Length: 442
Image (cartoon, rainbow, N blue to C red):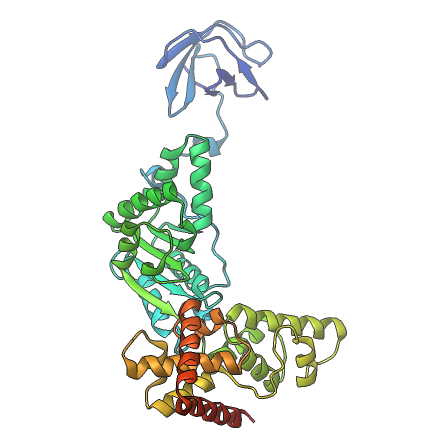
């Protein structure tokens, strides 16, 4: 006796070897086996046969019992290959199927390290190189807009995937998490959503977690997802524009979970780091600019790496389409809406340095959170002078002072103005500082 096989799908249709189409068949049995009458007309099969269907994993295999004179019909060799067992390991899934795709350009080797991000870079490398959940779990990154948080998040994911350990990485921003959760509610597929992010992830990277503010149901879902992953020793990395304690409209228990890990801040890059960023970008994009133009951009664009790169791209595009090289005069003209034409060239960093020297404190103290009078007074003065002598807004000034909130800068400026109105001596001191700082930049 010889056997042949044919495939049946759940819609009660059968594909017979040698036939180009599925044939509908009547259902005459139970879930484990069924008999069906002769259905071989027009398919090349003839004679009296009895076929038994057996269900397996959502598909059927049909075994045809016939006389020994019947020749064996074989499926293509590829279909006879056994499945790979690892494809059916419970809870495993392809690492690319959860979350958003990672940007291949955001890697550790393309991240410029400076004083403002050195520790964050070190912590992120440690997370990427160690088993999930072993160190700094959760890792909480915070800093101003455009300072490299997303770059670090992608770099962690890329490094883990490239390590060959088979770990499942899911990167997404909080807005995408919210949208997926809403869709899951609409489609009544919350179980699938929970399965995807609680059981099919080894490393969860969530950007802009502050977007969950005010979304109570999503916060509840993320809270339980966080707990499930943490208790299973999975790695969690989140980023925000502020530390956990300052997250608005976020539940206390969620803030507490974030604060239970390692909190690290990315600060605004200093002048040297900004120049290094521009030089690396020029190398990556094959852009040729004079050193004085690089220095101009680095001096004038201080608050955001994205603005640095945007200024560079704008100059490169102008050079490419006009066929003309870029010099300092052309750069100032092209970037007049990006680079403020400040003839004094005063930077917040210069102000911080001069104020720190006057009060005999460290510049790093001005960026910190100490509130004792010996630090608080020079910090207020430096913030006030930054507002008076530069074109930066209150939020931008806050970034340069350790990512302080803009309301803190406003309060500092008002405090200094009040003290100046009450003390003529203090007023003269501030005027003298202004003249010294202007003289440094002349």
